Amino acid sequence: MADVKRVERPLSPHLQIYRPQLTSLTSILTRITGNALIVGVLLAVWWLLAAATSPEYFETANAVATSWFGDLVFTGSLWAVWYHYLAGLRHLYFDAGKGLEIETAEKLGLGVIVGSVVLTIITIILV
Amino acid sequence: MRYLTARKRAEGKGASGTGTEHHWYMTMSAVGLAFLVPVFVYIFGKTLGQGHEAVIETFSRPFPAILTALTVVVGMRHFAKGAQMMIEDYARGTSRKIGIIIAYSISYAVTAVALYALAKMTFIGFILGAMGA
Image (cartoon, rainbow over all chains, first blue to last red; front, side, top):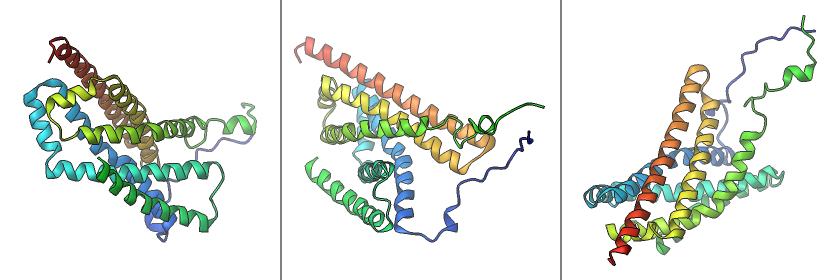
């Protein structure tokens, strides 16, 4: 029996090694939007906690949540949600083994970018 | 000398150490969130900017409360495991472990705070209703 060697496993290839492409860019953005959404979640949950605590505390949290800073965070989060949403659906489609030809994948990538902006604008108008 | 087949030596040595469980959870929660998130965004967006009593009134109703609870619970599990994926890609050793612990702690704390807030608003809504306010 051969000896089991301890191997130094490589980390994920770093971003600067590859030439940026639409497919890689849209993939990286999925990760960034997904993780960045924690900021919007923290603000939203803090606002909920304040509403459950007292009118004075709600006043404070609501002032932050509806200030220019709150608007910035929630508008950014709204786009991040829609981007992550569409990119996630695209991943489910990829997982099914479909849409993996370069041309189709790039079309889907463009669709995710355009779609997320359109959905964000529609949501702002509706809500 | 231990007798190990090549297969036995390979088992559990994948990138995750847990097979496809993690990926499958992300798939399941993604499908769940695909239904939950648009409704939550609508309810939250409509409520944000309203007065204190209107906010309590909304979140003490069964549908917004249960939907928000579901979105937070599933969403925070999805976040914890997604953040874990990112940390495992870019960090190793102790910093990887600490990073994953922090991500999990944040997601459980956020879940607990949100559920507490929802339960308390339901209670306040119940009291206000009983007083005929």
